[in-house]
Every structure is written in C-alpha cells, then in structure tokens.
Image 1 (cartoon, one colour):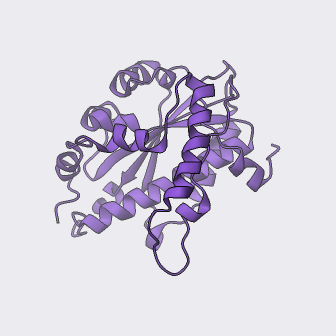
Image 2: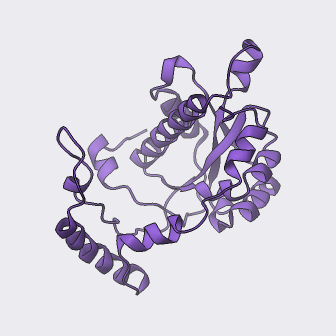
Length: 239
C-alpha cells in the first residue's frame, strides 16, 4: 500500500466526479476508516458514525435525494454522521440538546471525513463530498435507518479517477490568515484573486465567474431552512 507524501497529497486536492469501474480493495477501505478514526475528537467523545452504502437500491435513493449522479457511479459511497445515539444509550441523562453538542458533532465529523479523503487521495483514489444530502436530510436519514440523536452531515464518493481536473485557485493567504487581529477585506488582493479565478472558470466551463458569484449563489437565499427542525426532531439543537 503505497502512500504519497502528505503535502503533495494536500496541495494536489481536486474534487473528482468521474470514476473508473475499478473496485477499491477491502483492505484499503478498512484503512480509510481507520484513518478517520485516528482524527482528533473532542473529549474523546468519538461521535462519528460512517454508513458504507453498498446496496445499489439505497444508493439510487440517495442519488435521487442529492441529485448527484456520481453517487451510483463511484466505487464506494460513504455517509458521515454526527452520532450521539451510543452516548444516549450509555448515559440516558446526557444533555444532547445543547447547541454546543451539535457543534462538537459537526466539527468531529468534518475532521474525520477529511482524514478519510486525504488518506484516499494519498493512495491514488479520488473523491468528492456530497453535502446535497442535506437538501432532503430527513429522507436521507430514513433511507439509512438512522436512530434518534444521529444526523447525516455529508456523503463522499470515492473511486479511481477517470478525470484530471485543474486545481481550483484559493484565496490568497492575506485574505484568510491574519496576525493578532482580524483585518478588513483587502479589495486589491480580492481583485487579483478574482482575475485568476475568472480565468480558471473560463477554461473549465467557458464562462468567467468571480468569488462573489459563489457567495451570491449560496447565501443570497434561505439556506436549507429545514435543517434546524430536523436536528430538533432528532433530539439535538434545542437550546
């Protein structure tokens, strides 16, 4: 099992949405989950569960829920859940409805999933996150038979890449890393970044887009307003 160096893996990250038909060996899948479990976890709560969706009928349902065709086209599809059901079973008086508990679950799940993806990429695999499961989060939970106190936060398609997309430019460091105190937006730095990003999208999709377009697309409307009610239905995020 040959693994690429850490920084090479990190700096070469691209979302992969087209995969070959090659299966992922079972020992590699087990290693990826082990890599996720090795991630940091708040207070050793280990509040992450992974659903490895192998049944194609279930994948078809999750494909419909997410609207993402590659859910059924990848070798492996994983769903990462913030899961406090074990904690409630072991300690029925556990106060799981605090907002901080859900934040802990979300943070731990994100760290776990990113460890899995980095490990996968280091072994020559490619992947993409499927946050669109949250578009119909209750339906996704029903398909996966998730218990109370368990919520599906994201899916992940994994497989051997059948594409080699360009690296997507990121914001310059002076717009994301500040010394001692937060700093106002550097308009000149943003303008330079937008020039680079617009050229990237022109080459990728034939249309120039800037960073503000992504902000407008995602945040200029209600953002999954059903999420809070679902969390509360699962016994979380009530106070």
